[in-house]
Length: 147
Image: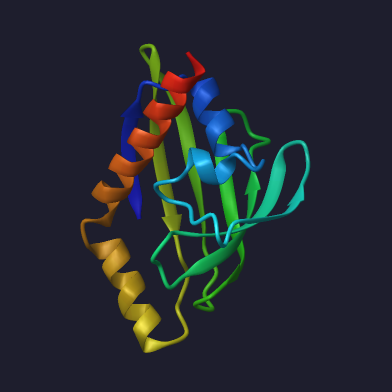
């Protein structure tokens, strides 16, 4: 899946929101992160391992995030509920007073037919537009609350 979006959040605010693995993470990402399944497992200065899912989704994932490369947040699946491992990244670029994000990720091969169908729909349907809107609203809110 690939998506691109702009936000009023500065590149520093976007990086901060993406890499906040404190107890605030479920509040910041309330549109896309289920607080019942969020679990921080490990964290360093420029990396974290967390279990996450979206509310209502049958899928969960344990991902290793890395933001050691300036302007880029990468993640690699460590474990998933569907059996396939994937990865992705978000590139954060300045855009006027805000930011432009370029994101891309894959979910690997699902083990069961049901999960294969659901992942296919996720990547082939209109979900990239839905996710773009949710991320933009989240980051715009984050920028507004910081001001």
